[in-house]
Length: 339
Image (cartoon, rainbow, N blue to C red; front, side):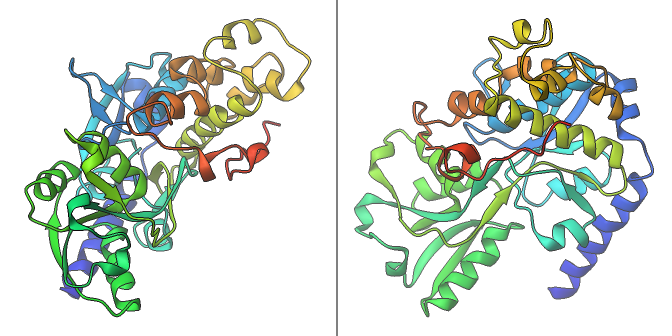
């Protein structure tokens, strides 16, 4: 078992080394389309709507990058990936970036040879159970069956948590969130564990969400973020600074509604001027034109707009900003300066 995991890591690392020689920015421009890896379907984060159009918080970042690079937020091929297939898809070059609930860890960064370009959601692992189970704490799950996605950090966190609390469990392995949802509803497991945001999104899709409880324990830190292959720094900069542009735009009050007016001429805030290209040449420094950030913001709004539209408190997902609030509002969200 250990040998197969080790060889799997080497295989992904080898693929990454081969694919990193390509200039992804040039490839995306020549192709006229961004290949963006997303989850197989997690309402609020990435899922096709009734018309087959992909929508969600992570999807919004894909569209922002496409708008920045190609001038068209719809020039995206969304590639569904599972916990097992996501890294191979990125390493092989099948996708240009991965915008999927993926935790930034040391080994993924260094052993698998990927670059996490930032954090777009500060999360933590939790547990959901049927209300009828009568459980109010994860520590009451001794002997429970637990649905768990394989190939994820949550699989390892689950083992650590139960071991640390000297309680037992029986894992029920699943490949995708959709499978987990089906298994959980069918009663194949007593509890479902994944990132707390994923639990909220999953519960929101149930016919009777109120019949299920998300337990209070958060058993890990899960900094989720988009990632690209090692060795293609120019492309990494494009994805990194597109994310930063959305975060900075919220801080400075630049929205999808006012970005057209604010970018028409230089205003009183030099940093906003540099962000929107009315001063300086920041776009040129990352291989784009001066309007790249303007287009990214127009695609779906700034970070706050994307959050509130897709997963915020007024959506069925109902997530509060919490740690994902701007640093000026007590959160951890913070963009380096546009200077």
